[in-house]
Image (cartoon, rainbow, N blue to C red; front, side, top):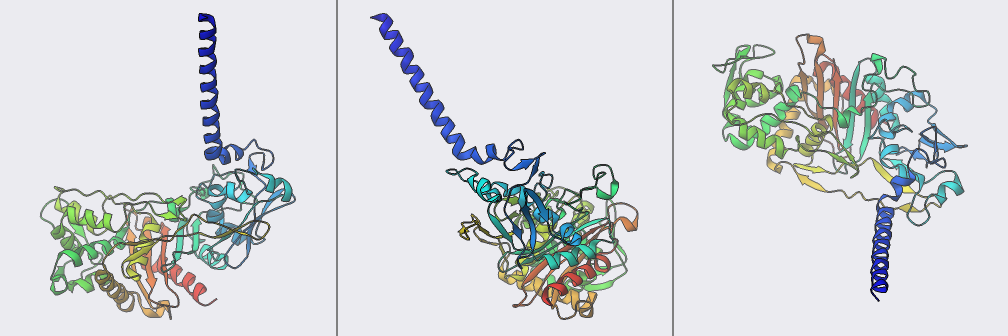
Length: 462
């Protein structure tokens, strides 16, 4: 009798273990099935580690950017387009981790839990994807950046969140990958989408943040006058050097002239805590999500209570240890244009199966109030004043531009600066925010500004 009882107990344990194992396997299959399928050794969709079987990827004008033909992944006929859209589309080995071919590869091959990859076996390719980018505009951006070592251009509709331009350099021809890409200095960082993953000293574009903080915390900021004699000495530490002798300037003039002396004084008066709170409030230390599945690098703001005045001053003009992703600066510009509201960013317009049926997207456009409508309007007026009085409307014909340049010094060589230009078009018919960044670009207004003009003119005059 004891023997039967022991055998029964042992059998019960085996049954429980089997049921538990089956449940765990089912759970893993439902949650991780696509990851199992997408392993490079699956010869149905990979060859020599490269994705070969996936749906067509097009831009917003139905230009084919990537597709599978005769069991091989092929790309647009234009060399410029292949390079300009590389970081949005991605490669077939997943080196460009933020490209849609990496992020959405299971959807592109048409995998689902019930039928697996039968779509690929039957049709030779999976679901088709339409992106929000305009390849023609991306081509213009790539050409404009080609004279420089590295950089990026982003343009987004600040009402809808659709990204219409996403270009990063250096780039390469995905159809003919350079053999020396990992050793040639020319291709340094070619796998990185600088718009999303780059982190940079913001230079004078950070004066937008300091201005917002001042508007919200210094009641008489517009009545103040600031004296500039080429530098501001906070009394201890390193004097904050200015780019010119501006004399006596108002708050509005100080931003237009990008006066370091004035903004160092403002930053020191505000203090570390208020500046840190504002940077966080404006999303500059947060990840920017694109289509819910692609993430930017997280910005870093180093300023704490008790920091020395000179360090607060340098930070307030964008020359401290602060690091910001270009897309986060673009989001802030778009929020200022949109009554203080930042919308969710989107790169994927639609998915469709081979039968022409639209597939549901997980992306939901949400609004986040980064700053008040009143403060946004004041900043819009100041950024518009910048262009009219400092940069010149004639340099941006018909764009009704609001913008701020930045020249972030990264070493003692003036030509090693990071050039920024960020802003938006105050235009109901063309609600576009933008950012341009050029590494080793010298001057923000003289290098990045003309690139922004070329790209926006190409966009609105199509």
